[in-house]
Image 1 (cartoon, chains in turn cyan, yellow):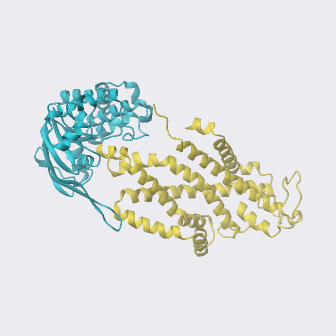
Image 2: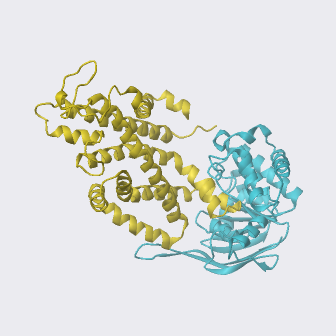
Length: 262
Length: 274
């Protein structure tokens, strides 16, 4: 599914007397083609997460539109919102807090299926088992509670839940932050494999340029709510041209960072 | 959770006291040696005997029987009140958080008004208007306390609504009702139960205060607060008449407070992670 973000701006106004305004997004426009793996890179506070929440219809934009396959999907009612969630799923940053502590892992994964798909209990069971296998997890964890899992397992459960409704676009909002390097690599490889198998459009929001270079076929760099660079990615920092992008690349791990000027 | 409660001495002491009071309330007719309302002026301030183990009061009634039946009033009135207050608190508190900014502002404003009024004054005014009776006590206490329960649920719900699992549930297609009943309420319940447990003590004290002031319950009712009031007229000659119901109120309120505080400590200790 093609995703088009057109002139999106978001202004937050403080609720105090001063009513201070913060421009989180400023006239952001880009298109992600069907099946593309696109990374959005930027520092904390550059508007990446706000953008992900606007695309998924969780918060409204101050101005601008979001199109899916050139059709605008305004979340004017709960039916339209469900229609959107059936097509677009979001994987949140913190795996532990994104899972309801009172739900079993089975219910965590089955919840979007129950709410967004019409499926018999038996089919639902099979779908959850299939997802668990795809995430390289054991079926033993299905009856456990989220706090009984490790960080990596929690993250895989979150990805399984996003995949449960077979969405056409998946947005990963800082989905690998807080994981150790080995776990990070295994999750990234898992995502690469899922992208290859499912062929869905993936939007990977991160502040790590090395991760973006490793994963994406295209990189969008954001700074202070604006896009400063939108470029095809060759996997090497040399594909970046904007000084800010180069600065982010230079701040990477030494072995990759050394090649930033290449 | 049960294992953690049983390992906590404070929680166990609280639970034992609560269980003892509840059991006493349930089987008071079996335990009481005499009719708690039976007056015999010949036995006025009678000393402890085999027939009257704790003696007799100013009207010759059996003190022990009255104390045992008093548990029925404390439990029988406070528990339904707490049930109703919890339901009102959960409904209005979650409505305030999930019902939009206007609903939140309006409910907050109304809560502010009710919280600013002293509960006892509200209770006295309501019982004064409606008259004595079980239902009127319930109404008086609910009017005095509903805003506290609503405010508490609202505070818990606001914290939970900011958490990622709520956002994840929305993305999973949960509507508002599902969000409230399947995610929000189960997650605020542990903290809310602590609040309810500590509020039982407040309610018991309030019922006794009303009875002490001669409000709500008919004269001569074997309620601990009412017994305190009756005993206050003979404080110098028979101070023990004041001590018995006072100790009952103190121990029952302490039992619920001990359990509530221990429950809070257990919940605050957090969950174990791998």
